[in-house]
Length: 220
Image 1: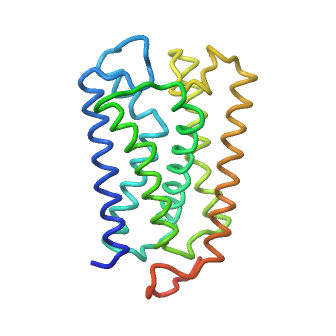
Image 2: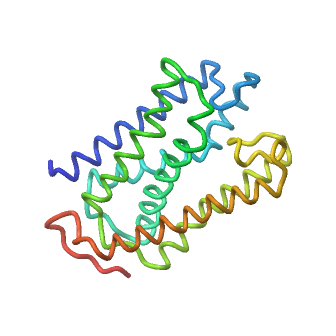
Image 3: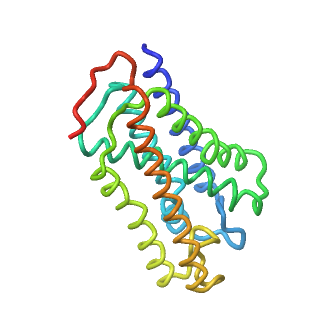
């Protein structure tokens, strides 16, 4: 196997292991970030997959599965998925480190799952993208399509919170913060997304085509 395939395969295995571990913990009664109650199983599972962390790890796993088979994979849909996976998991890591980790106290398997989901997978995905691409792959239209997921996630999260009063992260908890502060926080995260998309596009243009030895595919 080429180094690119090995890296993507490792990323896939770690991401899947992290997702499976966190799912098992929730099935066993884990509350993830909710420290006040253990809701019914169906509610716990719905909430689990409502977390941006879980969705971004799933995106990384899917992209890594494709790239472990073909490190030079392309296509409009895959380019959007790959960009969403890399930027989404990077935001996951940054937000968890600076906004969530200071208020969390986890031990044992919970701490392991948290570390894998928020630190190890983001590092593997981001470093793997820098080293192996594939690139060039990012156009303005790619960024436009990639923005749909985080914006839709935020809209659905706020809408569902209005219905059931539950928000996956404290920095968008309207019940605790009110809409003005929540929207300011959401705008800050959106600005982070836009900055990272712009940085990714710059890197995509400046760095050599990757993986090394792969044909330089058309950007269209």
